[in-house]
Image 1 (cartoon, rainbow, N blue to C red):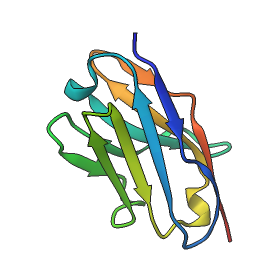
Image 2 (image 1 turned 90 degrees about the vertical axis):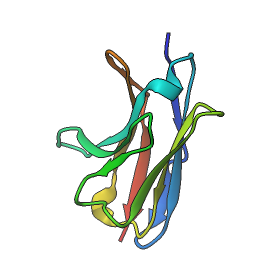
Image 3 (image 1 turned 30 degrees about the horizontal axis):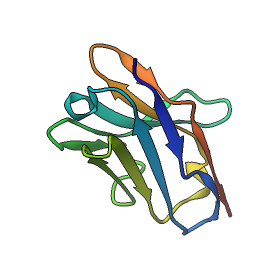
Length: 114
């Protein structure tokens, strides 16, 4: 069974940075696609960034050049480095693992004040 635990969210001023982490249990992390999604109040959950098992990445247009997704297979952990944060980045951020099905973390709140 896969469990995902996010950490690193919080309150930050516009222009600041945060680094989210997601630690995964189980043995399939290194062969799984990992991703970060977010959901703002009243909005649908949206893709932020994904990274394949081979290290290829994809970003939402709204975060390109500001956010970086990375993974450490030795630590079963995926990261999201978020720089130059904007108030519109405020949301609950969810870690996702995909391997035959989706697995989700519980989410971590990111709030960016103007």
